[in-house]
Length: 110
Image (cartoon, rainbow, N blue to C red; front, side):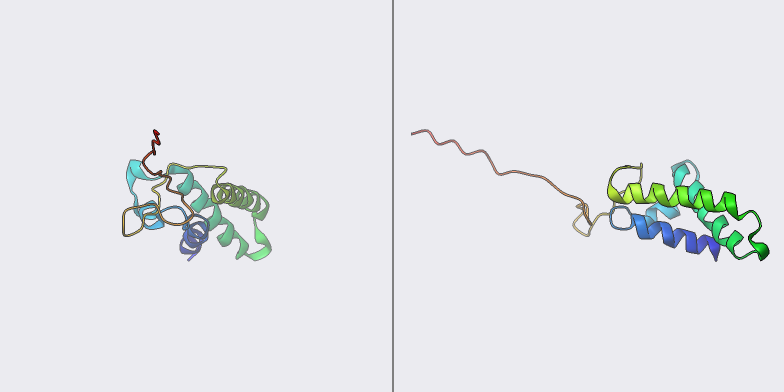
C-alpha cells in the first residue's frame, strides 16, 4: 500500500508534464534513479508514520520533505528531470507544454 501511495503522490506532481505510466513501468537502466529514491523515501515515510511511537520518524520526515520539495521544483519547471514527456494522441506534447512555430515570412517588395 505504501508503495502504491508513494507512486500516486509522485504522479500527482508529474502527471501534467510527464508520462507517469512510462516512468513507473521502466526497468533496469531505463529507470530514473531519483524517481526510485524518492518513491522509496515517500513509501518509507508513510510506513514509519503507521508504526507505534513513530519510531525513526525524524529521518523519514526529513527525507519525505526533501522528496516533496524536489517534486514541487519539477512541477514548477525549475527542475527538469530526464523523464519521458506526456504526449497526446496527435503525438504532440500535452499538458502545460508549449509548442512554438511561426508563419512563413512575408516579403513586401513594392
